[in-house]
Image (cartoon, rainbow, N blue to C red; front, side, top):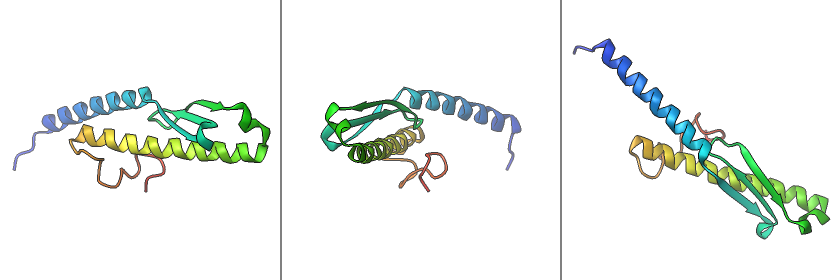
Length: 112
């Protein structure tokens, strides 16, 4: 079997370009998680960066409850972001439903 090193290089460059475009796409996604019936909402992008936190005035009346609501909203947004990234990676790889089935270990933070 003959392997042409130039073909390998060309494919590597193509994959690198696709991953760059994919990373850019992830940065443009907006995923929201909320808790307390919408008392706290956290928006993040596909890179798992928090974009915005919204807190209703009612949630600020009880500090302990607010802390719990923020944690729950963050975890909700993070889980949705992971699912979205896996779905998007699956589409990139031509595997609807996620890449690979069950997640993409090492690429999406927290997915083992």
